[in-house]
Length: 293
Ligand SMILES: NC(=O)c1ccc[n+]([C@@H]2O[C@H](COP(=O)([O-])OP(=O)(O)OC[C@H]3O[C@@H](n4cnc5c(N)ncnc54)[C@H](OP(=O)(O)O)[C@@H]3O)[C@@H](O)[C@H]2O)c1
Image (cartoon, rainbow, N blue to C red; front, side, top):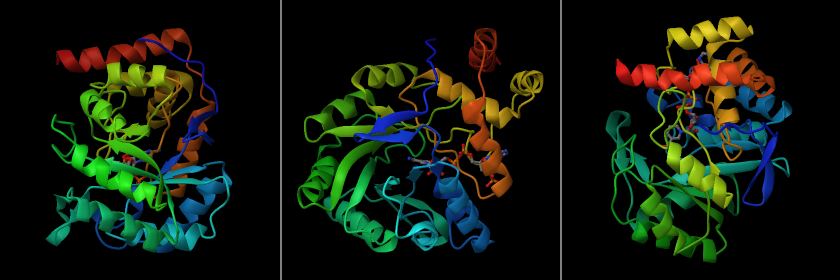
């Protein structure tokens, strides 16, 4: 498994963003539905993230829905000039918070306008076309219709750059025949490495790979091997899981999600955690252990 020298930034749509970003999904209520328990803390988390050097925030108008974007706007608007807000379209929320595909051209258009309105922007810097084939794993099938709809909104000046989420290599190639693709956001972390080849393929093309669920998602990664390694490093398991991603490939940009100031501070420190080769080898072996059992 290749490792990379940790650099602090990577160009995202031509803008150097800190590789330690922030994912805003946890700022909505339970199940990413409705308002958060503590709106003041949600605002404080966003402000502290930016004050700590985060200039890449991931969001969507279907978080809440609308709630997360409205909190981002309240916390950070007018936005710092160097902040890259990446959003996504492709789903809507049903009764009780279910996640429903919204992949028709009209849905894509409505999704972009929802994001513009709730973020308080005239143009969105990057919009990921989130494909809903299988909710957590990509599945093959043409995405031409959705990407074309997004490209039309780009031509109208409402979207500056286009990314993809939950996609296969074949779908990325198809999308690239329609528009320039600046980032890919798929499920990937220390114990979920189905995209290993894709990470490397995108690295050679200079395209950012942004793992969602970098800490394991709603149930953060639990591994006795990870905990043991973290203990020897004087770090927490979550810090080591993030540092492993930063070492994995220079095109990996992190968007760990948290609603907690303490967790935000802990996660930010992971960018300074150096993992010696022997430790990387042990971490790389965790997946194989998990695969065996
Ligand atoms: N494209 C997609 O389909 C897609 C799908 C899912 C997510 N995303 C994006 O990816 C971002 C990251 O994913 P995620 O937030 O779902 O999952 P994640 O970052 O893997 O993990 C978030 C979970 O870990 C907890 N956590 C965070 N820091 C921690 C720490 N230091 N110690 C212990 N627990 C910690 C959080 O709880 P606390 O709030 O208590 O800290 C939360 O339960 C999201 O915010 C969203 O922007 C995209």
